[in-house]
Image 1 (cartoon, helix red, strand yellow):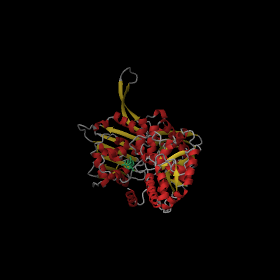
Image 2 (tube, protein in one colour; image 1 turned 180 degrees about the vertical axis):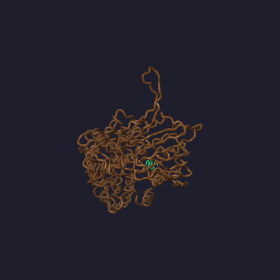
Image 3 (cartoon, rainbow, N blue to C red; image 1 turned 90 degrees about the vertical axis):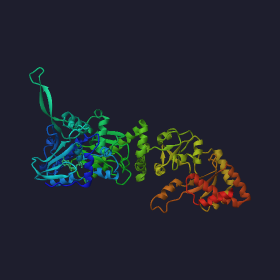
Image 4 (cartoon, protein in one colour; image 1 turned 60 degrees about the vertical axis):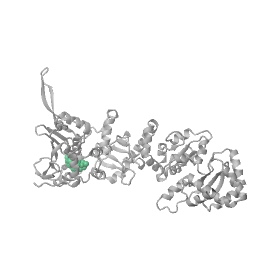
Length: 626
Ligand code: ADP
């Protein structure tokens, strides 16, 4: 029988397994049992449309066997089995397994990481075995075949005797060395332990003949050794077990294995309903966004089970986009197994479940924000932007669900503040919710207008994400308070007296201000005196609905050549000495005013974080001045 070579990728994977320094070699058993369980799922699924292909449900099982003499472990299942072709395709290549693509991008990563992060499947058997034999009879074939390999030198496939549909994987264990005791896997108690640890929730019985000693019948203290065919796993899926009986460790193992994460989930959510639609859901919020989360390749969705059998790997309709980071599953006996994707999409029950789940997630996040603030902030750093897009999307149709989950940076001591907390601690006499935009909180903190509002004792939200201001525009108000950009010219934080003084000053200097505006050749819509700048000489503010930050964002959007422009006002501090200089120069040297207007305007742009259109001109003007 001619040896065939493994495909390149498979060969590398194989090398990695054979030479693995991975300390958790024991996971090989979990991998083989999972494959067996998947194979039974497939056969069960097939039998729904073709009853002849299946068995009685109670007859499905995974049988483990150890043989100390021959140093072998055998995993046998009565699943779908494999044809000759499938043996070649599935065990000769790692074509579809995601693990390898990953490895390519990261040649230098230690094998430890890859094993921790992804299932490694069938090949993991080579971590403990030097020869693997797979006998299989497919549910779709009339012959049985055996696949055999001693590792890197290739594999062979030939016909064999194998009576029943299913597969049998036999691992011939490597010899023990100083540091590695492979023989431990021949001990029944060790196998039992591994099944409990990794495969307890497998829905089919995992059976093994186990020797136990028991009291001889009719005797006082004589013992005998008997062989008991024992089911090693509890079989009850983790989500069917009472909440109090599942440890954090078990949730973590389940989550990491099922959803290819290597960090424990930030939050586990369980919910259950027995009303018009009955279902159980087990949901996880990851600590970190998956690497492709913010790309269009990411697919949201929950696994859908019908009575413990998975019917859909990713059901997108169960999650709104703004909660697309949630992983997990829904199990409902109300779904029939052979339901098709199309019918599911319109399924009324599915909609009800989705609605309930969304509500549950929202409530749990709110609770987390209140009771576990530190972790909520970590969560928000990771996924907050998704919630913000959720507010803004679809003309704000979901804004009420999301508004209390939002956090913003703030001028107060805290790193973040929620809108609820902000409004609850608003000062007497404060009418609006104040905010300012900029690249970083430090830069925002230095804005003259922010200083002025803070000086009055008011808190300011610091918006650093492009989308933040759009979020506030979509919300329109919170607790009947409207949002006001402190850099807009309608900022109203002055007393009546201050307002009157300002009005008078502006009226008196109308000509000067108009002259300055004209000197700026249309760069601003007006020039005004102001009294809310503290010690700062100038700033820019905006009139109308478009702020300078929004203008920046809008102009960056593709195809937006006609993005609306902010209407810019140059504000001059009437209490600053520069105001008097301008007033007296207007009488004596109008040309100077022209130049000074430009300098002041450019300075104000710099303070607002806007680009300077002509730096050379500015430089020349300042040199002239000196
Ligand atoms: P994965 O399970 O991640 O797809 P594996 O390397 O573990 O990768 O297995 C490759 C493929 O071989 C599986 O997808 C499956 O089609 C097939 N396979 C493995 N074990 C069995 C089995 N016991 N019965 C039937 N098919 C199997």
